[in-house]
Image (tube, rainbow, N blue to C red; front, side, top):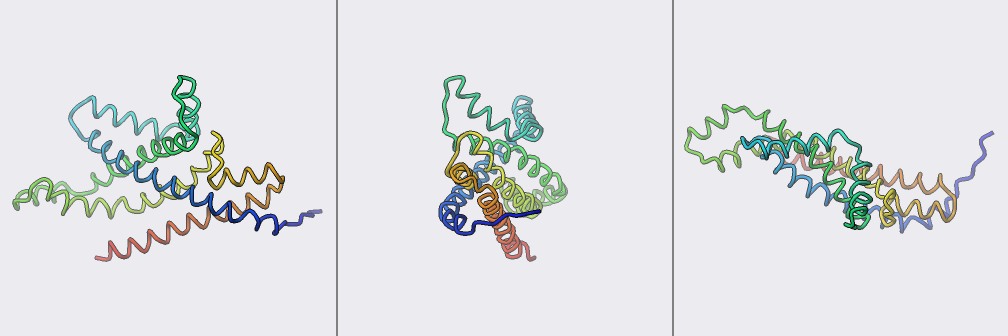
Length: 221
């Protein structure tokens, strides 16, 4: 017969530390998205250029990021670089791994978004006397943002969830790391990981809610 008593007191004592870990989790995911977007834009330009070397680098990055596990990418950055004498912290390895992954997926989203903007609109804008910069700023980019906005939101949620992989390289101040520390000390696995799951869920739902509000404000017309 199922017989288990949930230890609310133990769980509540850990809540402040877990909330602090949740903040680290969100900050890491947000930074990975910022750097990921910047790199993804560069990769998108590289993949559209006529230079075969730049196009090859861009395509290779996207292919590796999209077709290998994030766990392996983080392992290589932490243990692989360490074996070659280049030691990075657990947090840096996690951030770099998630950024690498984000950039690959976002570059493909941006590329698809650019393809979805009709070329005739670009030609029409140029025929009206707009410069290339004005065309992209006023015609292409607004439509591109509308197309990739929700994929960006999904990738942000995915980045938050991927931060849990930091525990495999010794990160102990994010949400999963704090949860694991309490688990090791008390063996109250169900309580702590159930609370961590709820916090991850709330973070994800908050991101989606904010994204919907922004979409309503930005794309009403």
